[in-house]
Image: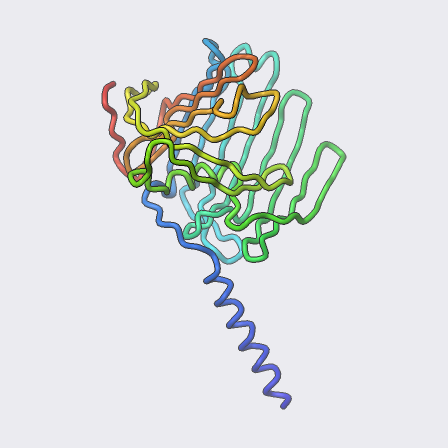
Length: 268
């Protein structure tokens, strides 16, 4: 009996570990891989206001025993905007390579005198997220419920790149479950077909998407943001446009490196 109980315990651990690994979904991904770098100019009206770099680390990282892409978004103000309000923001997501779900999210926000650091540990088996948030001398922690297959704000963009838009009809909607700022959300996205858009790297055949925005004091209307993904196997964001109450913002791709597939430029 003394030997049977430990043996049963070991068997339970092995089985539970196997089941845990099998619970997460599998999402086919032919659009991105390690080493990818995307660089953007951010325009506020006619003014070049900021730059952003989105990259996937050249090597995989292990989080909770699972291989993950480490995706990082760095944004900073430039020129006259940097003089009025200095912004140095970083968002990171460790994205499970098979499930295309965030295992860990981290952000470091520096905007003028405002400072905030946040780390989120996702448990997609229990559908919970542990949040550690720090603002100057304040610290806040807690565990929050999340919907199944919840994305963070970084991993959600990479998940968009894995979808098959060839099977969608113009006007078709789909939703992405997410978790941000200690709250779960349901982002409804509308597929508007395909357009040719002008970017700093040339004219690109693109997939047009509009995520539905909740009512707020920043964006003008539910369809205030339009995202254009390259209409090829990469599906990289080539242009983002936002209509705001205080003006318009355009995020324009100007440089890229280490794409998984050759990008097709209709006209330079």
